[in-house]
Length: 215
View 1 (cartoon, one colour):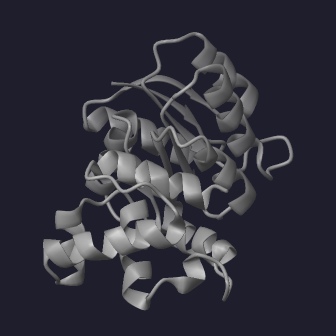
View 2: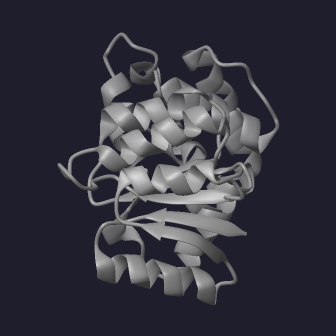
């Protein structure tokens, strides 16, 4: 699996290269800015991109904007964003096409190599890998007393957050220590309240939720 990296910090960039290669990935390119990242993506042969949010020259949102451009030019390009920050506007844009193959991890919450490479693999295969804090921020934006998310019960919000992370019913049941039947009941209620089409397919279900959060 070929990876293109965009990370401006030398030590972190080198660390990502070594970590990914140790887990069997091939690093096709490792750049420190958005322009070179896009050039590497345009060459083709990239299975997944790992992109920092803040890149030169302004260190604001160049990485996310480069990721959005890459997704526009290569539809469905798997992109895993890694950052110290939650940039809600661009995170929503990244999710809004509902195509999946996206992730957004916070650097200080990645605890080990297996967790990180599992996220890269899930995104590369068309799944999602969303940090719970990112989901919480996006949910907070959509929560008003009269809005759909505002009508969810505390347990339904927990289930929704875990769904948005990309977890299956079985994984959600294990995390919340409830039955899969209870999870299915909660997800049906959530979809009804959010006006989403129900689905038994885990990936389609997550895509629907992420599309909702990206509005």
